[in-house]
Image 1 (cartoon, rainbow, N blue to C red):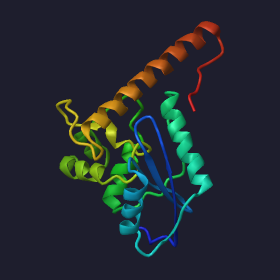
Image 2 (tube, rainbow, N blue to C red):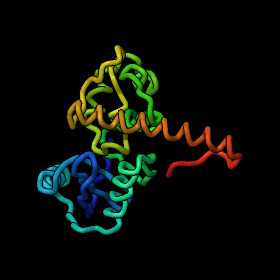
Image 3 (cartoon, rainbow, N blue to C red):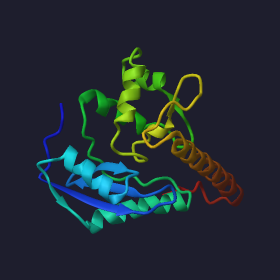
Length: 192
């Protein structure tokens, strides 16, 4: 079942270390986070939500996008932001599993298929990942082929490699932080 069309879509656009980030949100949460520039992003939103009013310059959404870009720049964990997952029941089940893949780890399309209870659906999982509208926050970049190769990525394999490398460095920082906190006795540090 697909969610009803929202009356208003709020949009914002910010620069980041991995390229431009274009975001769209409903009153329930972020429904699109893409690596589009402003004009292609708006075109995509108009095509996806033709009956919705588009409201530009939403300061609340822009602050959320800056939280994402700040996290990338400072090598911190991405923030937990409200999401409005819009897709079929199957797609949403895949995207919910993606939210459980830990930072710095990768899962195969087969692992995701097993986690949704459809072990033979790894190709369909790949299609759902390719149609994920909320890049980064719903981390489809962490899903790879069972043989360890990257598979595909809507924003290109170089971008996928870049994101996985950023997250690998982040987990290294996190583990070093835990090690130091044990040395100094102040408990584990939480990154964002």
